[in-house]
Length: 261
Ligand code: CO8
Image (cartoon, rainbow, N blue to C red; front, top):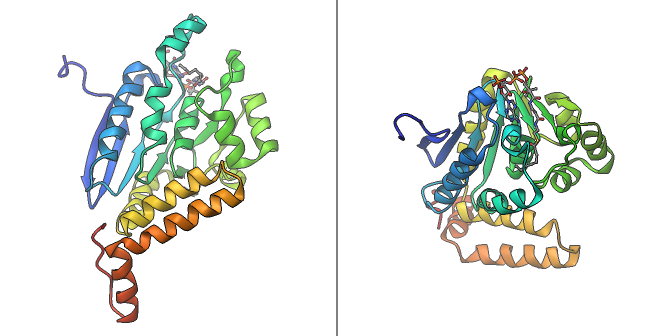
């Protein structure tokens, strides 16, 4: 049956430490149904455990990154149906992936698709990408972190506007409000995300992972506790070979050779 149904989420390439994960369900604008969610979770669980993976690029198609949760799949669901699906199980491996994750967004990133992009660490958007949380138009609200990650990304007054009207914002507007990291020409989106990923993949891996963990965990702590967390992570990095190599290379005026240790 795998031959009849090619996977809708697949690892397109893994070179120079950069894994490219593609969501490919074009007939539904990459909407997240149960299969896509499960396959995404499996990819992130597996890539998160592989030493040779130094960065992950997550992308969709030209028309849609992801146009949301599959509306047809929850149209008639009851609250207990929704509870029993335990969709958080599929988000957790993405949220807790220790590797840096870069979203390359072309086309629509709506609802669960905008939430998926916000699970990533860096968002590269093509200039005609569109972002939004249109759940309110369906009598719903975001259910995978959209209210919380959006307000942290763009602040209260833009978040409320987007969440309560369900409007879409284009890539330049998303950039101005801090919802994306960079906007590039549409046909450069994936390539630019990959080149950022290669740049990060060449950095000392433990430093990159500690930066990610400290930024994310620290954001929800009181400042004093977050600063302690930062100091501990900073101090821990003095135990790594890459830190010794980085300092030695600087002093000897040569290029460092990092081993990810
Ligand atoms: N779910 C299911 N199917 C979808 C979705 C979706 N989110 N989005 C698009 N499709 C399907 C369409 O139904 C259509 O199928 P068909 O050809 O069989 O009619 C096909 O994809 C192509 O779509 P369109 O013809 O509509 O393409 P357009 O280019 O005209 O429009 C849009 C593209 C603007 C993206 C439009 O499709 C749209 O508005 N989609 C829905 C966007 C949306 O509301 N997303 C939020 C969904 S709610 C959510 O994400 C969170 C809910 C929380 C519950 C989570 C737990 C499950």
